[in-house]
Length: 313
Ligand code: GLY
Image (tube, rainbow, N blue to C red; front, side, top):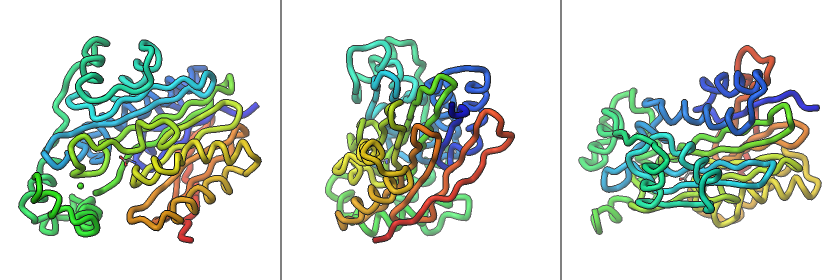
C-alpha cells in the first residue's frame, strides 16, 4: 500500500499542504488536487494561472483547465473561460454534472453560471502593467518585481509577436500541475493555466486537452505537462508518458523518452512533464530547464524538493 501523497510543480509548492491535509484526513485524491489547484488559481502573484494570469493579445484573461479521475477514467475540462477564477472546479463539474468532457468559451461560462460559480475580475495591477508594457514595447524597462519579463521578451522575439500583433492587434508559459494518490489507491491529475502570455484570442493549449497536458489511470499512474502546449498536443505527451509506463518503462525513463519525443520535433519552445507511477515513484523532466517538482505525503511537514532531469537531445 502506497502512503497517500501529492505532487506539484513549483508554483504549487506552497499550497501542497492543503491537499496533503485532505489526504491525511482520508479525503479523495480528487478533492486534494482540486483544493490545491484552487489555491494556486487564487494566488494573484502567479502570472500563469487564474487570478493575475497574463492576458491574451487583446488584454483579456482566458483560462484553461482539466481534471481526471484515474479510477473511472472520467475527465472534465474547460477552455478559453473568461471572468471565472476557479476553472479546475468548473472542469470538475463538467466531469461530474454533465455528459460532456470539454466545454469552451461562452458555453463553458454559461455552464459555470448554471453551476453557481461567481464571476470575478482576473486582471491584477501586475498583469495589467505587463500587458501595457507589451503594448508600449517597454517590457525591458520593468523592474525586478516583473521576473516574467525575460520569458516574455524572448517569446515576442522568437515568435515575431509584434508582427502578429500589428496584423490584428503571445510567451511565458506557466501552468500548474498537481497530482495525488489517496488511501484507496485512487489517483487524480489536475492542470490549470492562463496559457501562453499574450496568446492569440481563442488559442487553447494542452492543459484542457486530455491526453496532451493531463492524463491518469489508477492501474498505471499519472502525468501532466507545462510548457509550449502546442507540442504536447501534437504528441499527446501526458497520455504517452502513462502508456510508456504501462508498457514497462520506469517513470523516470517514460518522462525522459517523452521529452526526447518533444525534442525530435525540432520546434521552438520548451516542454516540461511531471509524473508518478502506481508505486508512488515520482519524476519530472524538461527540455529546457533544471527540472524540479515538489512532494508531500501524509506524514510530511514540508514539501520535499525532488530533482528531475533536463533532456536536451
Ligand atoms: N502548457 C500551457 C499552455 O500551453 O497553454
